[in-house]
Length: 105
Image (cartoon, rainbow, N blue to C red; front, side, top):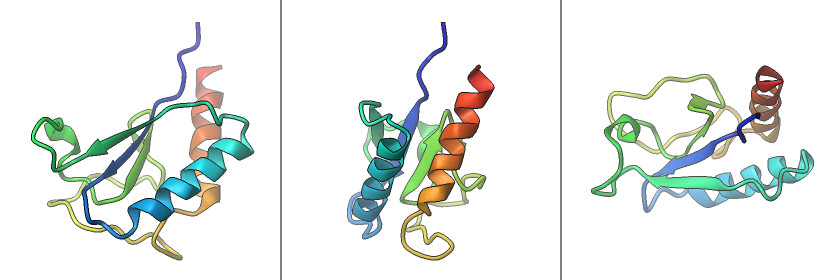
């Protein structure tokens, strides 16, 4: 049985880029007919947040644990700016989702 793709939005409260990133994720999922797929949101500054997420910039999108831009965590959490804007490009998210789906076949 193929497991569903795991999508995570890593962020910290107050980051001005989070809402725009949520919208781009929704558009990507809709374009691939994956609207019902759950996106796990992880507040990287929350006391119970796993240590492995604490140094990701906000917002970061992980698809099965891999950043959609192919970047590693940083030395310290900070607001993230993507090439071309405050959120990742729609095409990058779609590409990451398609790549993961291909690997699972």
